[in-house]
Length: 301
Image 1 (cartoon, rainbow, N blue to C red):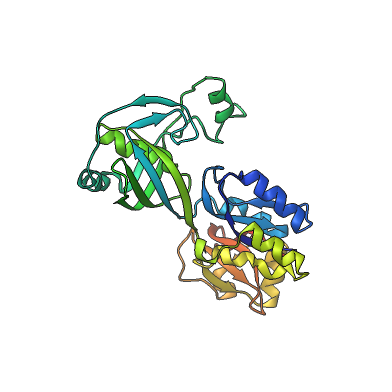
Image 2: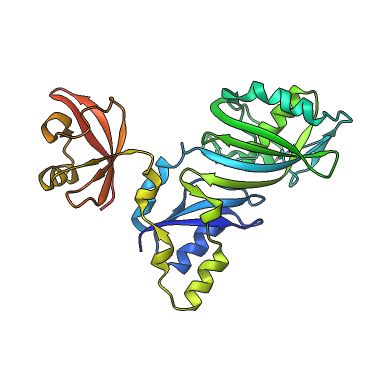
């Protein structure tokens, strides 16, 4: 089987375990996920099955949307409620304070990744070092925040943050940074990823849904979306049978000769369709000695 399962991950399950379970259910050796969700988090976790695994690295830059609940007045070593409380504060910004300060976090900003993360230092995940009480210097990375909103809850010290951000953003760190700008402390208590690129929570299925379909003897392939779904925002370029064969053999396809994508700028990535309109490659427009051409980044055949 090949395709993408738009999985709604339950709380308490690691992304690694979700992949392991799907590997068994779909009876495949090739399976992976398109962006880690911590065990605390719920929501969209695209699972890549079969040749869809080749698309994994292209998911990393996808825009993601989250809803996170956070509590004011405490700080933990993990920046969420799974950690140990390391500091408390009586500072309690009101809703208006939160809404006003969010404006300073829009656009491209720098974020220092947390120690409790899967990022690696000298080949070792940071969370392994953190569990031993070690802390190492982390370089701030550029992220982009497209939208931020905060809402109150029934609890005076609790709020909900809705965020649309670039890939690589740590929502718990963003919450702590926003709180720090107000001279306050905060820690994340719940997180749901409601969108990952083209995949949404509304259209996701749970592992219970998948198992039920398996028990009924139904075709699990019906749950898998074509890998092309991940690249729908990109322009499509359709090649003739001749140029399709050339690209599949590793050749660059010159825009002028093939009469496709001539108006697209250099660096543009495209979905490549064969003569029958079937998706088979992700390509990028580059400059070569003989002109501008499309070079396959990844073949899905």
